[in-house]
Amino acid sequence: MDFSASTLNPADEAVLAAVIGDGTTPVVHSRPFKAMGANASITLVGGHPHLVDDAIGLAAELEGLWTRFSPDSDISLLNWSEGTPIEVDPRTATLVDYMQRAWKDTGGAFDPTLLPQLLLEGYTHSVVDATRGTTLPDSARAPGQLGDIIIEGNIITVPKGTTLDAGGIGKGFAADLIVDFCRSAGAMGAMVELGGDLRVDGFSPRGRGWRIGVENPLNLDSHVSVVEIESGGLATSSQLKRRFHNAQGKETHHLIDSHSGESLESDSLSVTVLAPTAWQAEVMTKVGFQKSPADFLHVSRRKGLRVGVFTSDGSWTRSSDWPEYRA
Image 1 (cartoon, rainbow, N blue to C red):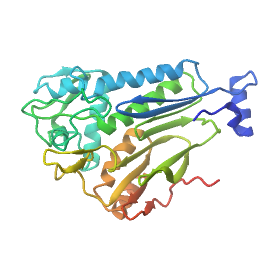
Image 2 (image 1 turned 180 degrees about the vertical axis):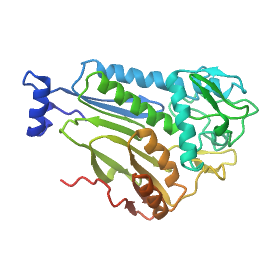
Image 3 (image 1 turned 30 degrees about the horizontal axis):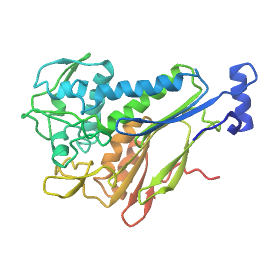
Image 4 (image 1 turned 90 degrees about the vertical axis):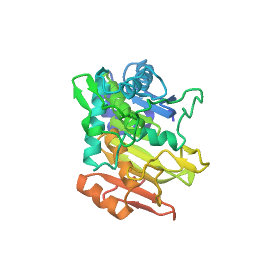
């Protein structure tokens, strides 16, 4: 969607004009693009004319670090390290630290070491480039020993047999990094969405508050909800997307049960989480598929998160403090 400065409400238009100092309002740039095997988009309020290009370039850079479909990415180097310490980009070290934190915080419901099982379920090649596949050493096992990974600055030692998949947490963290980059580079507001993981901050094209639609998994042209938030992360995961067939011909999907090692079987068709950051929101969506909606709402309430669950019977259940936008 391409927003113009005239979409700002009068009060916020005056505020932004005062901030700029020359009586004008900021230009809004919005562009769709492809990143990390998914559709993506960026919207910036104000900032450098080429900042959108720089942000999309940063998305490509982070994909290069974390993709499992390239043998020279940081993730692939770690997966083939066989216990040898590997020096990685500082952002990769932070990502692995977040993986460990998320694994501990969710009691193992989130587990990025299930890559060998994901390959067995049929997700072996890139969904956007079938010539790019994932290979792992013979030692690879699932689950791995995530808690035994050692991070010393930018040096990471992964136990032999343990492999990592940046997956959704990588998309979420990338969205967080790109928004932070754009804001520090002068944008008055920024929204970045990478394959269902979204982060917003600052002024929206309408002023204060970003309006975000939550997709209906059974009708992608409609929304089950529209929320309005000023900042934070929102992630939606669906078991109806990224479906494959395993060696036995069974239809599978990319959401792996951390206990059984197979594609999750859940009445929850999609799970949406609002959290302070996109990576935190993404992590908690995985928990939502492994609990009943009632239990998931209870767990999320204790963590101070807002969540919504769309189930196979067409029901939409959400937190009591869900920030529904009402025109």
